[in-house]
Length: 312
Image 1 (cartoon, one colour):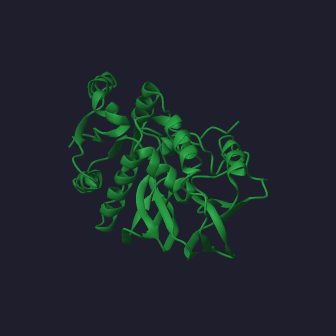
Image 2 (image 1 turned 45 degrees about the vertical axis):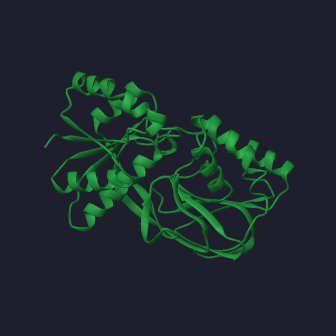
Image 3 (image 1 turned 180 degrees about the horizontal axis):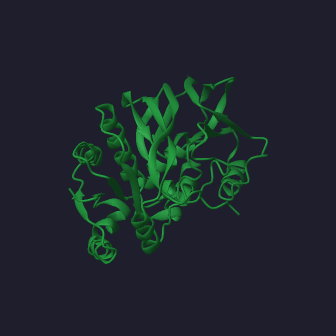
């Protein structure tokens, strides 16, 4: 088996990943890297392909795509671990719409730099998240973060857009202001605190950014054994615009409508209304009532720089 198993989602980046295959192959040959490429054909196929590769002894599995592909590869690594297959390194070649996980972990989003990062194969332990509820009563792992409420609906709207990148999420956020303005009342149980309030949005972050440019958790660390939370209270549409602007700069921390917290476990229960939610952009539920999330410390060995760059 080749040292690198590339798991490529041909639909990632609105088809950009499939178009990049010749460039990827040329780069890996130029770098002298042994590789195989497997293309995904259906949802969660990347997890299946990853699990098979890890159990067959592959050293490095690379998610080629966006946050959704990275999410599935992570799940495949964790599934393989359950049957005793350990020691694999996780790589990311970001060719997706948002690439928030790669950005948050300090992985270069420039193609050549990302290939050089993979060739160096320097891995560092990072945390992962685990969520139960909605479509996944048995649970599913996630890399970057979970969004409940407004940002989940933004993701659903952006997925239908022909636009890509940050602009797709920004336009979706503006549309969502008129679709989702009645915040559900949610009971949030943390390690050492319970918060019950109308919540426009709850972001449970292992990374720092969602939606290609929304810094939900600008101070998040990838290996501290804690989620960073951004909890937004019910506000009017004008204040929503203000919050959106602040979050694009990571400047919401001191806003009175925002609570920032750190916790290893969180349970979100709908008291009034329901919980639309996503994990790494993948739908968890559109109208859930109970979600449980926990951190998995040092879950995987990620090929990435020693520390992500500081946010300006």
